[in-house]
Length: 108
Image (cartoon, rainbow, N blue to C red; front, side, top):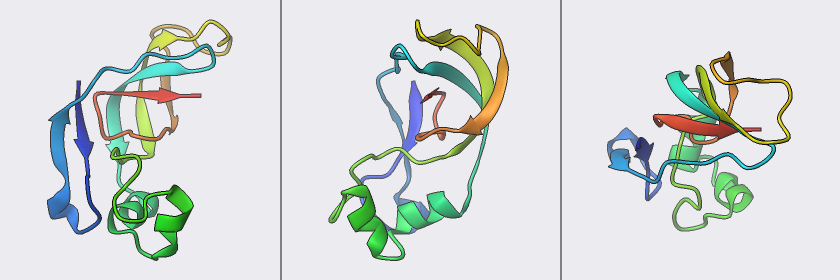
């Protein structure tokens, strides 16, 4: 699957589209096929590591620990974990999930 990643902190020019491994939900997650994702202040601050405290909070002092950006997501449920009762395949959903700038994202 394709995802927008960043391997260092900086301006939007550091973002790259890469082929990454498709995710699989654990027992308490759903896999969402992303139809839309939006940029918000959290994404911008994570990309720039501004304020500097962001680096300490996320565990990535010199480079991002998690290279995937994106929080806000809307899409359709593609797979559900065995303990998930609220959602079914094909449900249209929206909310927050780490790494939403990708074709698929996992959410709890």
